[in-house]
Image 1: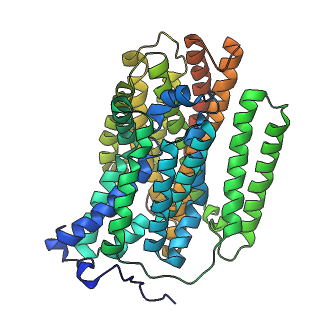
Image 2: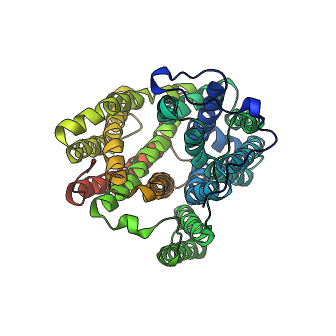
Image 3: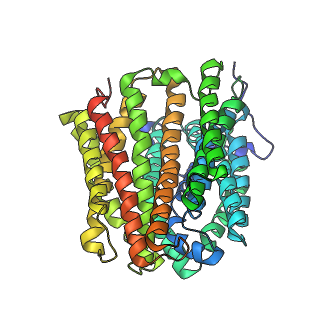
Length: 489
């Protein structure tokens, strides 16, 4: 049985969210507009931090002295903590109240952003990024829950539309904003900018956000910790092996520990009464295939961003702002196809649309494989980004439908959480795996991983894109051979 909605003294009756009007009269005015602004702006900031640091990576490397392989932890520390604890964060919101957990997450995220901006060393920045990921894992799952709690009827539909359109632009917007801030100020302000936004949200949220009802249940802490620890151990082993080889005891120990921890996670989930990842979600063939594809696709797209940003700045000598704007073809391709994906599914079927999307993404990666130090933007970068964006716009909708339309309503929250976790996990593992491949390649080609030649950098990225192509090809084969349908039942 759910307990009554919790209301703190700060949530004065006069400032409570407005009652939702009828659908025909739905207008965001007064308190409801402020409520939506708080929710959407916080979700946007959390999502931006997955990509906003990418454009600043060359400056961070030079400023703090990261190695090429170690630089991946600036991205991975955030993504691994975010992915590994997101399901636990969502569960915490159910049991403790989503507003309470949202505020705790925003406080941690804001404090970690300040620490990261002040970081004097690689180690401090990595710790700060991990803490940011933990804060995001607590806050992000509650944003959508708070939106549905605070809005009803036609007003809820309008609020969801605003929420979806804003968050859909986060990936490209993060790259552009990262370029603008790094060029105008410094990479440290990419983190500092979160502080006033976070503080404002923490001050306003208790007054304008109603608390959600709290559920009765228990935390699957063991499942959350073993899954996150296993992913971190595997990522550490990959980075360590890239720098010291697989004969290094620490690399071998990390890989072994990661495998053991992930196996323990599966065992725990099979025996826990209230698991954070119910294994029955993988019983359906199409749904399991869709989860696999949504793990592989971010391995391709996030690593593509990670390396192209560095190629543009290290090889083509683009400024951070130019590097951010260079990703606009990807945004255009995604916008064009995503707007028409639903109509295409209705006409041609979800599986056909998904196949076209994965094929376009695969073609984009294949285009990048022969990259060299003489590759120009127009001929060698813009085209692959356009294809990847167009493919991504066609992939997400049918696979989301394939997953969400095959679960019972009572399990829709778990399915959505596993879907998001799979995509974040794929993004972090993709960067870790391909960074290890890249670091090993440039060390072999130039004899030094700390001062590689421009040609070695380009060839190392070509090797990484070759491995990325195998991930894209695997996603294509799974879509073709495993997934029976990719749409609603």
